[in-house]
Image (cartoon, one colour):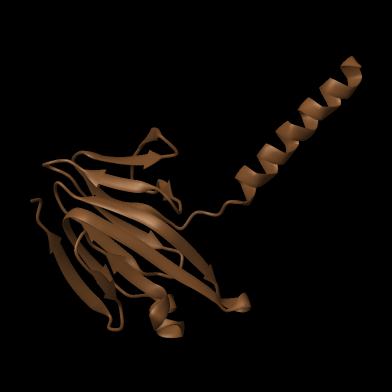
Length: 148
């Protein structure tokens, strides 16, 4: 009976490892300045240049913070001080024609420069704000969200 539980335990650990290893990052941080942190699955991750970001991460900057994110498709988002950006969804699989980038800026400032996804599937790139949704069709835009 103990062997069965032990094997079951090992199987669960193996599956968890496979799932974690298969999750590919959406991109990584660049040009970090000041106070920047990442919320991931209820935990705080130290934000440094090169730190990977994943779908469902939230990137926050403090009063002296700013950071850039370079996504796998070469899209770039820069966020300024006192900003909060949720990386809600990121799928970039050109061979399977699967594309989706949904980010939500809930406060602060952001600048976006489009990458390959915008060229291949412009309707797949979306930025949400508390009061509107922006469909990216061009190459660059800037957004400011004020707190109420």
